[in-house]
Image (cartoon, rainbow over all chains, first blue to last red; front, side):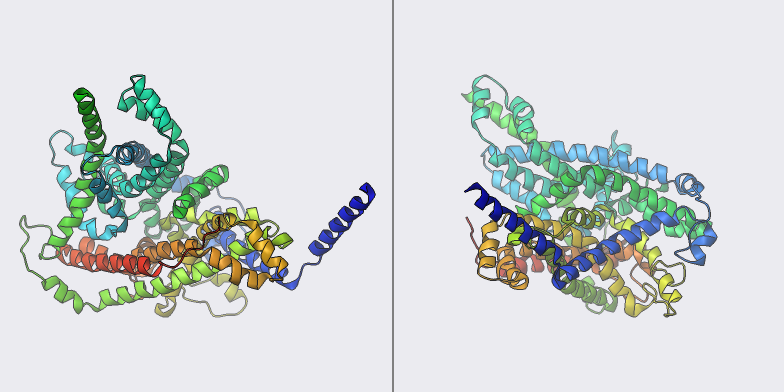
Length: 304
Length: 305
């Protein structure tokens, strides 16, 4: 009995091994197609890193010239002359404020709209969600003047007007509301009510229930939408282009977008490639550590 | 009891106040103002813009550059979703089902490919734009042209030839988008019960008919979602054109798009009224697309549960 089953098992294994070794032409073509796309992704990025340690002459002679020595000073000039360090710091400041604000205000609104029926609830929810359908370009002109006028508000004006990081962060928060509320409201609706009722009987306030019970329970949803917002706000270009005109206040995307022009003035293309590499590097690092969470965070919402 | 209701109302108000105020001030009010500004000749300096009715809309009917931009968005709307979805479906199928073994295993190395293909998605469009601006240089310093020239082929003006530049833009957009949809479709495929594939294979389905007869119908919902996202991406495109191309939409307006024309009119020429009118037109194109997409996508769902 056992010997028979063992022979069947080994013959199956052999058949499988045979099938694997006999790569049909279709499988070969599949591998080829995948490899071509992989090359298309890797080569431009590697080429940029490659160019970032070349000299000016090597860049212009031949795009694939091998650098004679690795010129790390390109990075120094990118950091200092092209202000990549400053722009990166600005991006960090804006995104830290805006993501924190988006998550706090977004989850507060989503929670109330998802779990507290009251008159006007549906209308407010639709008001938020309708923002998903509008192209931001329609609002761009008036938005510029709204933020400009904010600068005239007494006391807080200087902090939230044009050319301020807090001002841009507030705009990011507002424009992140539609998706954040839409996603989190759907998430809060799925959470069980029993725990909340028990806590309320024990005398916990609504606010306490939210911060101490609901927020921890909603963690998976909060994590993916946080990733979504961090990446979206870090990569934002259109809004800062309109609202931050003062070079010192620029975020990284603005600095990078302008870098070819800047490199043209300075005749310093090697530092430009170093700057580009500096913009890609943190994403590469973050992605290699969190790639699973990032993929899930960016795609789960599409399957809702 | 009354105290409890009061407490509940206070809680609701206090939680909604800040988000709603912020949203109304920065999102809703600009959208409403835009419709009014579109009917003025405002140039930003005068305190009171003059009301000119539909003059801006009359003017934009003759604005050849704007309609050229609309055409470009239209071509992108057709081609970007089509090409991206075809490539992404093909790769997702290979990575998840194409490896044989009962029709559900992916090809060897599928995890590596998935991780790699997705990476461009997390780069800022501005970064990708500058990267390809350099890679597409028209001489020996260009990443693509240098090997071509070494082979004795005439260099291609990826961004300097008006006839080529638009396709370079489309190519870069596809380059960045494909990985996202590979992952999206892979997730969709993972939710399809594997006995579906096994049953089809027992019935003698080859790889190609497995794809057309089984995978595609079961993935149809996800494909529709992808189509809507890519359509909106095609209508909303700005940064890649503005940063990568010559003269922000050139050469010779060959790559310009609606968003670029709106931005140019508003913030380069200070035609705020006219730019808002262009924005209103763009708004109706976007809403039109959304309604059309929702109408067309009402196809019977396949339930497998």
